[in-house]
Image (tube, one colour):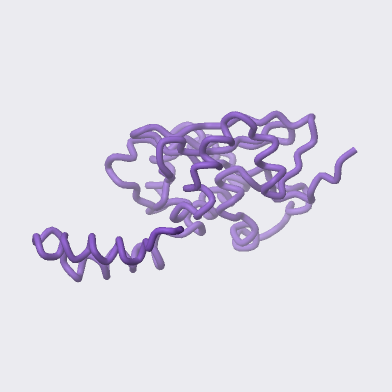
Amino acid sequence: MGSDLTGHADALQAVLTAKGLLQPADLEDFHHKVTEEWLPRNGARLCARAWVDPSFKAELLQDGRAAAASMGLAMPEHHRSLVVLENTADLQNVICCTLCSCTAFTIIGMAPGWYKDLEYRARVVREARTVLREMGLDLPPSIRIRVWDTTTDTRYMVLPHRPEHTQGWSLEALEALITKESMIGVARLEPPYTGG
């Protein structure tokens, strides 16, 4: 027995429109932002530049919001800080929001469905290695995992570990390699670990 989310959304839209709180142009503007502006390629641009520009990387790790703004990427006012977490050869950072599904959506795109799922939100903080394995990321025991929970005004983004084989790649090729999942921390970009 599932709920009809489309029906609920339509009913909510009708009530808000009737009360004058929502205009048709608001929905068009939101759709444009979600499909054309708030995309993972924004975060990929930040990460790729950090990989090739050590001074920008230092700025990104020091103040992610300011570094994003320096590249023309805005964040909502209530996202007071963007903390960028660097993955390394022996550290995997993972982000979550145990209360809802907050992300730095203008930077890494809208939260995927699994990120909003109550089971993911509850389990990743308690059994991260198992959850990551179930999602296809089997990490060797030598890689530590650290889980970060979004707060009211702090958003996180993971700076993925740069794979060795990408030395000499163009900025565009590096950007194309970086995924939303790697910026959330549930994926790595180097070849997978096969156990042992």
